[in-house]
Image 1 (cartoon, one colour):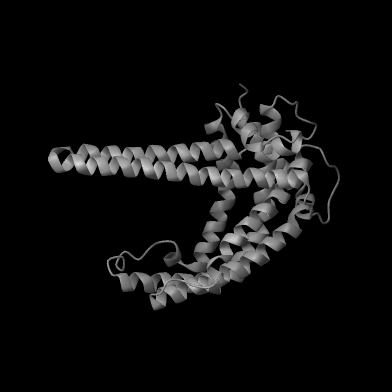
Image 2: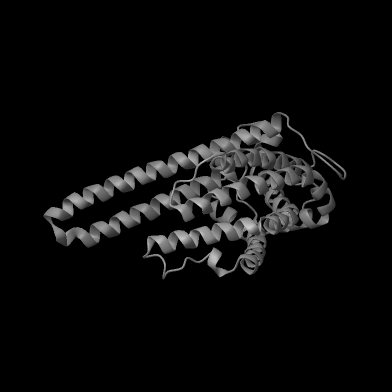
Length: 301
């Protein structure tokens, strides 16, 4: 069982991303632009429909309700294209700069299959955890009716079971997802299986790499979005939570606010995407090379 070299992986991710930022931009700008445009129209329509629903008290209706789901699947395909292109560059399977790139071949389709399989597995895991915890809660309710003194311990047990289930879902998702793309690109294998095999014993190391590479960008984006949308878009109004009408009006205002700032939010996402995708996929490429016992190439640092 190989151990992921955390420091080397982080250094390589930053060196690759900032050292080849022009190539990264060339590889991703077309699919990223398509993703941004589709998301703009799909989410904008959804926010409008949701706000109207909250204001009228009627359930949301129309095609706008389903558009985000369709956009999510398209986004998954586009991210697969981006991930394959950057991973090929990071693994040395393609050379030289790129001014524009878009491809939909076997590697991209297999990567999409891996991401979609991960999506289905996470849903399955969440459903299983919900059923188990719900069953424990129902049994606990029955038991406490005959013995109320057990209400406290049973409640703590149900909460602990829910937290354990959530931790399992996160653990499984991290291990299954981390090496999907390089597994597909390098050997044409099923990414989920290969990722699970290679990441054994490296969960916390993967978390450390993720925090070091992605957290700074997420914090920057969060601060900018907070300055644009205001605190109300992220923190619920506790004074209104007890009144259904006030809560619905607050949600409608949040939807309208999000919809009105969509151009700026999509522009922000587009600007940070080269750094986000570059760090994400180059880190997984280097990690794959290390965990599969392949020697790093001359670009490694």
